[in-house]
Image (cartoon, rainbow, N blue to C red):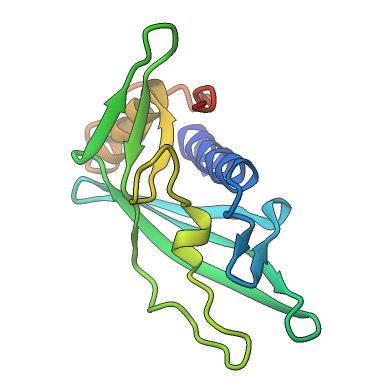
Length: 167
């Protein structure tokens, strides 16, 4: 894997872990709880103006007893569909709406359902939709990666640039 792809995967993972740890309901998706330390992001691909990646990890529930569920879901984000916010005293943050390419959420009776996409991308800041948030620089790295895969290379630093959390 090249340095740019590795940097993008690391930043997506960092963004997911930060969202899960920073959101009151994110760790507790119904009766399920995602372990932020188990999150792994892999298999980066760029195609048709999108970036796709796989997120895997572990969730647990204590009702009834103790059950562990290991998941692996494929997501994509359209690079031309984004929202950018820039607070007066901060850096710009880019928000992408992830689309799950995996089957519908599993129903595990009597343990209920686990909605993995909603648990990984919890809504925040009053939004009802869940977003993947990255810095403007990281958004440019994603675009450059997708363009390079189409045969139009451009220098990519592969660095991690995650913006500060929103208050």
